[in-house]
Image (cartoon, rainbow, N blue to C red; front, top):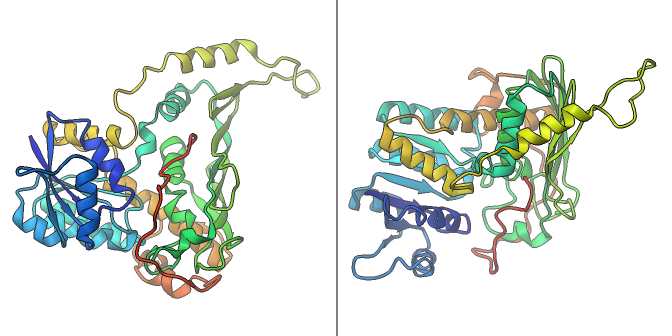
Amino acid sequence: MLSIGIIGTGNISRAHLAAYLEFPDEVRIVGLADIDPAKAEAARAAHGLEGPAGTRVYAEAGAMLAAEDLDLVSIATPPGTHCELTVQALEAGVHVIVEKPMAPSLEECDRMLEAQRRSGRLLSVVAQNRFRDDLAQLKAVLETGKIGRIAHARIASAWWRGRSYYDLWWRGTWESEGGGPTLNHAIHHLDLTLWLLGRPQAVAAMMTNAGHDNAEVEDLSAAILQYERGLAELTSSVVHHGEQQEVVIQGEHARISQPWAVAAETARPNGFPETGGNESLIQELESLAASHVPLVHTGHAGQIGDVLAAIREERAPLIDGQAGKDAIELVTAIYAAAIERRTIDLPIRPGDPWYRAGTLVQRAPHFFEKTASVRSQEGESIIGATHA
């Protein structure tokens, strides 16, 4: 039975708590730490963790790490705190799952990775969309190679948030949030892009603030990723009504996409598409998609289940710290390309100014100034949409 601690009990912690509770024979949640203990108390009550032998509440992460014999902690705090808390937990000999994004800078990501290597503990960065049946299905079909060489991909990380979203104290500034939707919403789609397509060779991008005049950060960016013979387009947004998110992959022989759809053309002698397309290939791809075996656990529970198995089996998790860093490298390239109005080549190495913590804060434009700062907000936080 592993002893679990949660650092940060805001909205995203609910997903972690619910996920751990899917494994009652493997874990027990012994501690909740939050700078607002009342919030931790509320989380404890909401998940039935009270009682004489129940979960204990701490006002500071270090106090929980010192008082409890923890095996694993989930870090569910604002992005700017991830590095210090992760290093602190790893140095205390505790395995770590840290929420996305891993950290605002590559320099901080490498500090976290070095702490993981020194400690010998496990580090996993949340990328729960890899544990979704629709996306696992897309990945499995893609890996068969049936669609041929990839020519183009269109990834839409389309979200919508009202103006008051950026009133929460840590949102809307480059220093505390680390960026806008490119970092904090599209990080899932960036991870999926890397998972499905691999690392691009170069990135070009533009960004703006189209609808939130109470935030310094962007609320919309558009990037072009260059691969050896293909391109990918990535939109990161919190201004898209309807939140229609999708991943569309155009291959040499066929197109597959999420939400699931398939198309395959064949050419007439003059090069124009034949009516009806390649029906045999379409049917083959449909059969491959239909053969996908549903995952036992999905979302956060899927990833947490893998981490628990990795601890038990003394292996690396499916999503490790390097995967988290790779996503941050892509975010950094998009910001650098948009700010400097030039193409950014990958990888971004330690000698590059964009590698360092603080460069984004120094160089990023303030589209607007933050005009409100509330400590908490009422109402449900929508963690995900129906699509990717």
